[in-house]
Length: 59
Image (cartoon, one colour):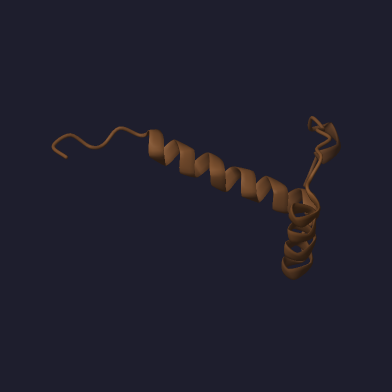
């Protein structure tokens, strides 16, 4: 990620099973552990935003 060193950093604690999952996914897809965590969080953000959208008129 270009300019990643300038992004805010966050230290997190992960349960062992979650850490193992992140490790497996990053190895499987050839990405960093950070990228896998960001991907998972963005998927959650998208899901929450869709759930909070009002239904189109007439539904």
